[in-house]
Length: 403
Image (cartoon, rainbow, N blue to C red):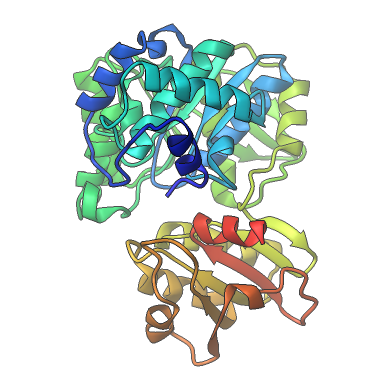
């Protein structure tokens, strides 16, 4: 479900399949038809269960602070299709995207791709047209068979590993890691965050098989604290202020900086510190007002990090949760974790074919203080006693922000 994609498909009479089909054959054929735009780009490729968007946002901010031009392909959409392809920090324009759809139509891509594969090709064509200095590309699901895995990156990044998308990627950490580690390319450095031991073993074996240098958080680079917060990897930076909160974001920031350095990009202390003090990704511990926050925690691993961040930022406080999730997620376990700092739960239905019913969430709610409301009843200007956190699917959050 990519908001406004259907408008472009209808305008240019270009068909694509809205199902999920893992594999690279179709997208490789499509890229050959449009002249292999992926071969002309300087790319950093990012996979992982959580933290991909934050890591890319930090890299984008640091690169732009140093005067580099950037292209970003990320998912899902925050508002609509345009913000999934960003050029120098701004969503792709309607005119440029329209010209790309015309190019894909003319090349005969209609009916050959899924929606996400089509958008992947569109992003690569946009990057070829604009020619940014660096392109930051997020894997949509997994890695090995994700349509973005047609690229040859400067470095590969794996931010984190946890159980998610088990219907497609497998039911164990090892199976999921095998998919994520599929983005590792021969002779290309791979930078990893704080991974579980079984995940780290799979990545290490894959890196050795590809003769790729493995660069590991906690061993080769770190975010530490003495008198000030500092990053230490190939280079060392003092970081007096970080706008994106939480211990998981410290790791994401470190991964981002090390990835840029491993890609051979020279960074300056003052510009790094300034970028990190100001970068914020929508829907990641995003403050709406003093009482309302929104966050895209949509699985148990993300919920644990969010609870830890709340405990650090608001010690001793409980919060009112507003939750909407996809039925493909482990929502029972996610609610159990959120309940650790819960005053109440409110559940909501939202428009997505895979949205879990509010009644199903309520049925597994671990506390009795809960209710169901419509989206129209959610107040993002609340001044109630307890802080309100609206969490779960990014599709819910983006729908609320469009109201």
